[in-house]
Image (cartoon, rainbow, N blue to C red; front, side, top):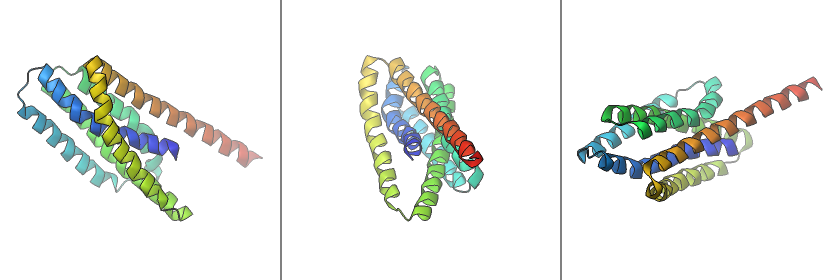
Length: 185
C-alpha cells in the first residue's frame, strides 16, 4: 500500500510542481505569458482524457501501470526540464499528464479492490490526504528548489520519481519471490 501511495504522490506532486515550474520556465525563456495558459490547458485536457480512459484499464494492467507511472512521469519531467522550445516542453507535459491520469485511475481501481476485499473504506481518506499533500508540497518544494536553480528543481523531481519507481520495482520483485517461495513450501 505504501508503494501505491508513493506512486500516487508522484502524480499530485508533479501537478503541484508544474504550477510553479512552468511559469518560471516560460519567464526564463522570455516566452509570452499566454503560453502558460496553453500548457495548463494541455495538462488538464490530457489528464482528464487519460483518467477517463484509465478507468477502463483491465485488471491485469493495474499493477504495471502503478509501477511504470513514476518512471514515465520522470521521462516527462526530463523533457520539460531540458526542453528549450515550446514543442519539447509540450511533449513533456503531454507524456507526464497522460501517465498521471492513468496512474490516478489505476491507483483508484487498486484501492477500490482492496477496500472491497477488506471492507476498509479508510483507504480513500488516505488517498485524498496523499493527493492533497502532493498538490500542496509540490509548489512549496519547487519554489524552494527553483531558488537554487531550475535545473536543480527538475533534476530533484526526476530523481524522486525514479527512486519511487525503483523502490516499487524492488518491492514487487521481493513480493513475487516470497510468494513463489511460500507456494513451494
